[in-house]
Length: 36
Image (cartoon, rainbow, N blue to C red):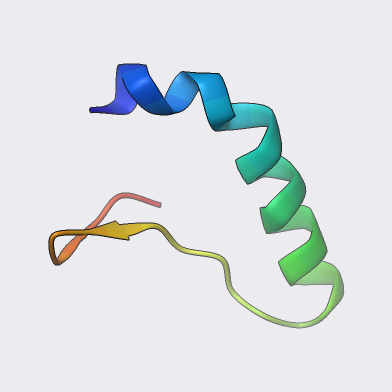
């Protein structure tokens, strides 16, 4: 699963930076499993 998300890694890093800037948390949950 994580191999697939390597494609979107730069976008996810950008989302995490944006979330921390806004004082929020960024997490990725798939089928109830927290991946990030």
